[in-house]
Image (tube, rainbow, N blue to C red; front, top):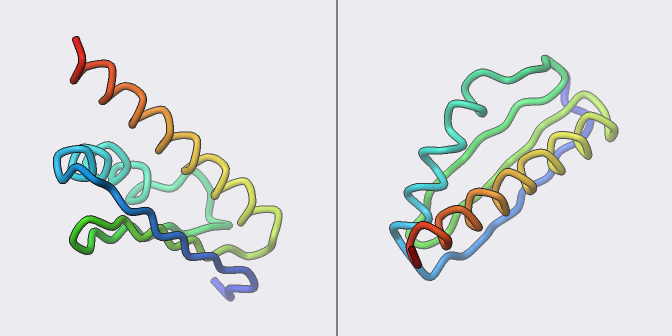
Length: 85
């Protein structure tokens, strides 16, 4: 894939458990992408998650970023509900 668009997002977490759970939830998605137009790499660095998206074009980049950011928010919301139950 010849990359024409790339974005890297770093998110800092206060909870190691939350970050580990999030990585576990997102790794299957990153390892089996639904499209060949974008690749995703997840990296845990201390209390930070680095999300790197490389895509063929800006449309694929935006769609992939939006999907992963929604999944991150949803996963965090579920973790918080479960932790307070």
